[in-house]
Image 1 (cartoon, rainbow, N blue to C red):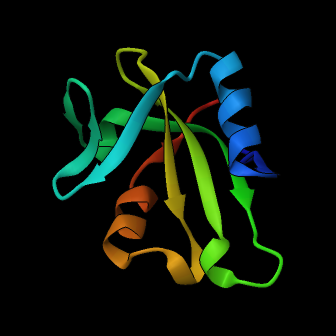
Image 2 (cartoon, rainbow, N blue to C red):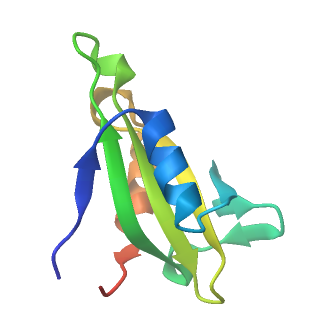
Length: 102
């Protein structure tokens, strides 16, 4: 399946995903991906879309906004660094989340 990745500022990504119904906020937790109702394991989520932002000169400004959907249909976003600024354990967690079928 083709992965869809867009490039643009984080605020633009958040606004675009909000228009598409991705209104919940997800965050990294030691045990999985956190949300207001608890924690999802990577196997319970799918990546729908990704926006990446690359800073003009500083690699620490690199970030990604993931649009995620849970098995029960809960849509949300996960904002994270990538490249030099991403933590290995979080990157490994993201790699376990499959892409949704389009």
